[in-house]
Image (cartoon, helix red, strand yellow):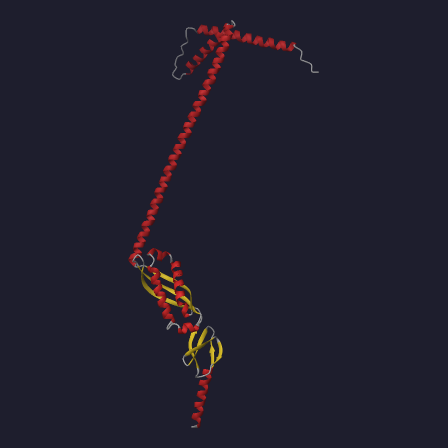
Length: 319
């Protein structure tokens, strides 16, 4: 009997000691209840509680946790059905609120996130939902974090893992993308042909302009040459006329002989000319050549007299 009593005392002592000493591990916080009412929160470390008066209520994990969002079908704004799943990173900041403000924290957070995924994607077209995943994550994070704030929870990130359209819609999108690429290729090819035609026409235009400028410049120079030649002939005619007026007949012979020689030169250089016919006045040409010789002698004599006069005149003396 005595041994049984001792054993009961030992068991009671162990139970009392276990309820008296509480060790909270790192990363957790425990709530303390007094007859079922929350009184305080125990941080990590060693604590002592009055047995049978105070008890441990909830053991809350204060580390950041990951919550997988299961796949669900969502109807977009343009009535396309897509299958969406995701992942959420959250952390409990207030153990008392997380323990007593919501019945099942994970289930409540999961329901809230899935509902907001349907709301956000339902307000967007399919193309927007596929191309603006960062915007979707940002909207979900703002809404869910604000909604879970009264629970003492901080939602750090929400990531949409996959947005999968149905198979027939994927095939249709593939055909649309292929048609769009072919359209762009055809446009680029047509644009290339157009630019090539424009460049070719511009080159022909520039070539025609340059050819016209060349012809214009050649005609201008030819006209200028004709003017110079006419001026020279007019000057020669004037000089011959003055010489004739002064009684020098050889100048006239020279002028006529020069014209005869030029005419005979053109006749001789003609490619179809097989026979050269001299005019009846050929003897007159020879007489003209004799006149030219006389004229040359007179000119040479005058030059020699001028040189002799210059030699006889003494040079001026510089003072």
